Structures are given as structure tokens and as C-alpha cells.
Length: 318
Image 1 (cartoon, helix red, strand yellow):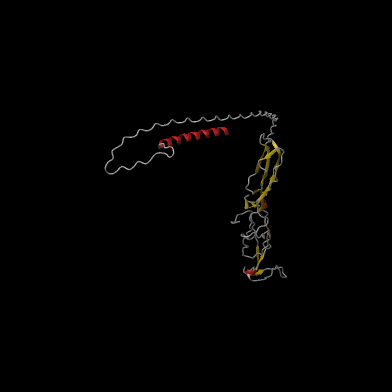
Image 2: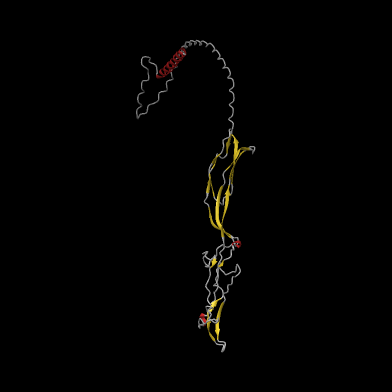
């Protein structure tokens, strides 16, 4: 408690003292004090002391011990403390205290501390995997439901104020193991494995959907067509006999050229005096005595005759 607040009724204790005086009946003076209650032979109290300070006698005993009240129903610790700063739990009883005359017994404060009770809270994270056919949406396999992972935080509750104070620390993160998708004949899952998932107290619940699609059916090969009968080869025609080449015609004899007429002799020119005209060369052919023009004609005829012979020879070979 930071301030002194009365939680229970104050206990006040009183101690009474008395003084027995011996007084002279004649003059009324105080002769002394009786502290023992002793009397003389005449039955009169005797003087035990003349010191007034020592003559006081307690009527009751010293300050008695007091048990501190139980305030647990109000949320306080059962055992209080004499120390306001530390809950030493040493004030279950205020012990008996000696009383002194004319000296106040003073005040004794007893301090009650708030009781605290341990608190804890738990958060669970779930994982579910659903298996469905893609084309119909119907269940392909039973859902997989993992064991929930729990996370805990501790603290305490003030039993007087009912306020819960959390320590801020949660249990460490945990992991859902990897899950292999079940095999279904004729179908292929879009997720073959749901990988391991690491979660903590702040993680939402996990839900996965695995869709199964039909496997593609292989196309049936077409039946081969019946092979057609090969066409029967045609019989080759009998080769024709090559034609016999015609014999070349016998070349005709060239016509004998007509004799050329004698050329007209040019008139005789008068020779100049200077220079003298050179002599004309003799153009007469040997033996024949004919002029050069006849030689040219004969050469032409010979060439024509040779060509005719060559043409006839070529036709004969073909």
C-alpha cells in the first residue's frame, strides 16, 4: 500500500495506573506512598516510598497482544507486514507491549499487501486440408485435420483491483508438419504436398484446398486402312524393228563448165616516153596455155564435186 488507508477498525488499548497516598489525618500532608499494600499492626497501610514517581502501580496488565484481522476476502494477503515497503508478512500478531506510566503506548501500523493469483491464457492454431474434385466440387478424400498447436502466456491478477497483468512472453513458435496429398486413381492433385507451416500465437487458423483433376486420356490410335492391291504392271510392247536406212543417192556428175569466151584484147595504148611501161607478166598457164581465169573456174568445180561426195558418204553412214 502506498498510502495509509483504514482497512479494518482501529484497535485502541488503554492501561490504568493508580497511586496510594498515606496522608496525615491531622495536617493533611502526604506522608508517603504505599506500593505493596502492606499494613501495620493497627491495620493501616504503611509508607513504602516517598518518591511519587515510583508510587504508581498499574491497575491492568501491559498492552496485550492483538491478532491482525483476516482481510483475504477483500483480496489482500492473509499475513500483513509491519514494513510498508516490503511484504515481510511479519504482522500476523501485534505482540504484547509493556506499558509505562505517563508514556503513551504509541501507534502500531499494520500493512496489508494486495494478493496476486497466477493467470495464464492459451491460444490454439488449427490446420485443415480439404480434398475436392475440381469438376464437381465433391469430396475426393477425407479432410486432414492436424492436431492444434497451443501457445501460452502467463501473468497475474490483482485480487483487490481484479486487473490482470500479463508478462508479455508467449511460448515459442511451433510448426505443422508437411502433408502429402492422397493418391486417387485417374486424378492428379494441384498440390502434391502441403508444405510445413510455422505459426505462433498471432497466426490465424490455416485451411488449404487441394483440387483433383482427371488425367488426360490418351487418344486411341486409328485403325490402319486396308492396303490396296498394287496395280499389275503392264507388259511392255514389243520393240519395233529399226527402219533400214535408205541408201544415199549417187551424186550426179557436175555439169562440165562451158568454155569461156576469149576476152577482148584491149587497145594498145601509146607508151609515154618517160618512164617506160614495164612488161606485162606472162599470165598464161603452164601446159594448157590457157589464161588464169580458167584456173579459178576449175577450182570452183573441184570444190563442188568434193562436197557432193562428202554428203553422199554421210548419208550412207546414217
